[in-house]
Image (cartoon, rainbow, N blue to C red):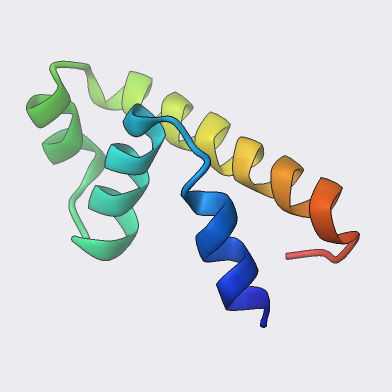
Length: 68
């Protein structure tokens, strides 16, 4: 049930967040590889990944009250 909620909320993220998180968590790409692909340095990608995860957690918690 939680997985289905997360997938639904994941769909609400902007495209840049989806690209970064997909590449990092599902395709197992390094921050450096993602940075090359998206034309950013690895530090920027690390910051963006952190912000994207924070958005996902915030949306999840506001909709469920659970913790991840």
